[in-house]
Length: 503
Image 1: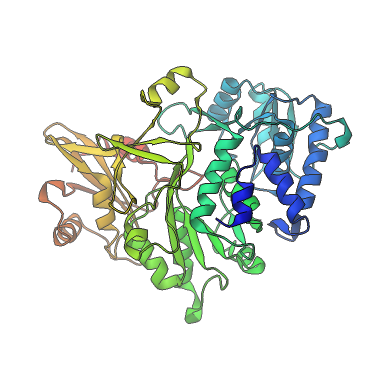
Image 2 (image 1 turned 90 degrees about the vertical axis):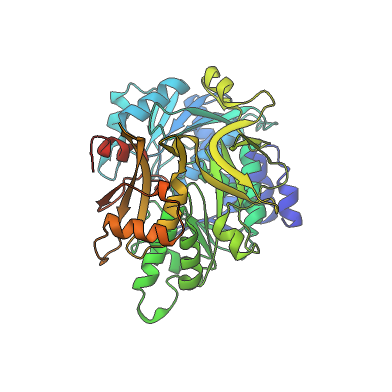
């Protein structure tokens, strides 16, 4: 971390961080989208006017404001305006619908709700009215506006809960995760410390800004003073023009994003780089098979650094560009200073400033932290002698076959080396004889020869997998089910689909 970034990382609040960056480099661009550009100074000035407009509407320090908005310059402006006021923000992923949105509005007791109107064919305003939301207002092209002279002083401390983020809720109701400005600044500082960007870089936010990765990335942008290109909708090859036009040097999001860039590189005529200025792919949020790392470096000619984070802790570990290839391929990187990792009975537990304050439900908070204040992640892993973290699976993703524990991730990593495997999810299915049987669900790349169970198990035997871990069932699918944020595979949907099948 350079001296300027290190000094800025001590900012008390997100607004304090923006104000200090705007003083340093007021005219440098911070947000780029299509033909539009916003500087650090303009972001601060316009956010203050939006804050004044919100104040005129009745938003005060501590007021809970939910927003369900796409990745746009206006979304960042609204979020910083709320940070200026010291309101409590409850970002909601724009792809969520009545069940998740209604739950978030009820549990957070939101007094205002910002929506994009009709977006991508869905009437968000109509849904908000249907759910009985309070204080509905549209915030897509236009935002509230007012005279900053009416504003009270900005918040003086950053340790109060001012953010309610929502876990995915793929198997049950979402959890409301409580964050402070300081926990978000700590997470973004960790990301920047690992990636080591410079003011000459051009970053990108191609995932939902309402995801915990939104403030994580924006903190890094403010600390290091470089711009980020915003993509309201990420799809390749359509988005490539934006990456090329703005000269993006750092891209990514998650493993699915790496694979999409890799697929475009393979389609590139003449063998040139798919994004000529790109030097680094980075992300997290989902497991990264070692073969994906090696393929990106080999075929795209860029570095790939992957990290480990979650809604509760936006940045836990991150690979660094100067790590060894072995560590970048097989680990999740190292924790930054201030992040304590403890392995208890194989489970990864965490303590540090970037860890959330708990959940809206006190009972969930009590269950999530141990007696020494470490967060139980539910992830399994170990630390290497060099301090790098290796994740081996999830507590809930261990398959127990005839009393033996089997790691789904171990099998998945080996299957990624097979040329007929594009992506794969290994799951345990109920089995009267075995307790659980091992099932591999495979998404094949275009043009691949149809994979058979015999070929799959032969490959795994050649890779040295123990016979008792070999899959007994293979399912081929056109596309694995994924969520709409970081494109994580939804294994619970696969279990639901195949639990009644017998092979």
